[in-house]
Length: 294
Image 1 (cartoon, rainbow, N blue to C red):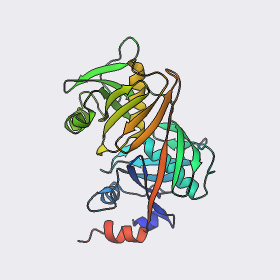
Image 2: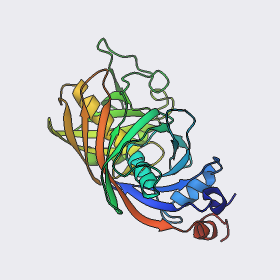
Image 3: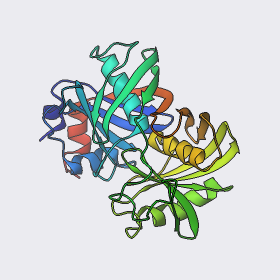
Image 4: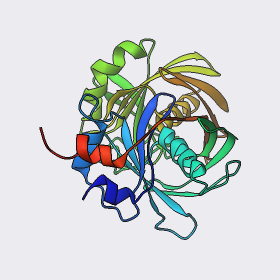
């Protein structure tokens, strides 16, 4: 199946949120193949992206659209926080949702609600209700929670706090996040005895109760410039461990996200940008990236 036939005259966009870059396209019938995703996301041989976002019809009555998120290795992730901001802008650009309103999106992490709070043709600011964080999910982590409900464990000699934002996260507090991410990230991601479905890994330095510095090793992608669900998980873990109160700015290599959380039983809110980079011809993708010709 060609990309042209999958998107059916809808545009294919390269977008980013805080430097976390994506290919965004319409796939109404769910015909995109993992091998096509791998070819398109390949940095040196394809378009290059941290993941691919497919716009699909919703599977539930309380949402109009579904966001299906592919990692660059072709695997499917439950959610992507930076990606859903780009998803919302893609729909607004097409006139499919209001450019100054909210929408409900069907994801594999449940119903997620982004709201466009600033819009231009190139860039939007999007605030997202990311839902309630989960401090223990036995399908994602094997360590039992403590008395207060939080999971803390040891991986590669580093203490982590587990947080699920639909997708799993192991949050590690360190004074050397930039140094630690590439060395410890892949080892912890693939530790199946702790994380049956693998995990994202966040390395967080607490600069102040209102400002964090964070580096991310993303499951299926490696080091990325930003991770929206990771920033949410990092803040929740900081709050659970007494390092933060109700909101903070999370500084990532690709930009800054604002995260707010009132505590247990409340949703996490994430605010950040969504930026158009360029539009791609589906015909050129078929010819140059997915033809299989040398």
